[in-house]
Length: 146
Image 1 (cartoon, one colour):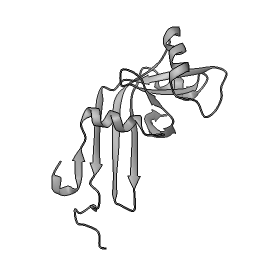
Image 2 (cartoon, one colour; image 1 turned 180 degrees about the vertical axis):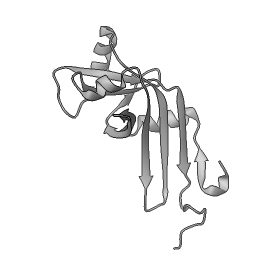
Image 3 (cartoon, one colour; image 1 turned 90 degrees about the vertical axis):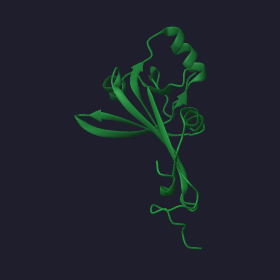
Image 4 (tube, one colour; image 1 turned 60 degrees about the vertical axis):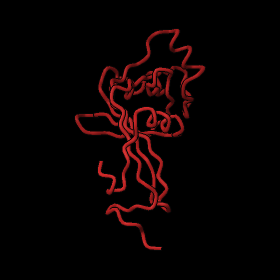
């Protein structure tokens, strides 16, 4: 990235650190051959994979198991014209191992909607990219008027 454009590329670890502090992200997947974006709560596991929790009966769990998806989280300060965005791309897999499921029940994301039969979905972090908008810069790289 050109430093004059107001953006700074984030390294992998910096991206994961920022993801760890984000409360909500967006799952990007395909539904009925069209792009779909779904806001979700999430956590990161020990291997830096994104972990989602959803109902075992959900269309989401069935439609993304084994599929490559993207996951995005960000933080924006509109007043300061600053923020960051991180995208994780990887394969989504429903966690089927009972020991892993039990572990994630204790340590993973909490569902906002209770379901008697939740499943966890892990998105491997095969590709992690991010960028930060430098504070006070506009789209055209000029400081905003005071």
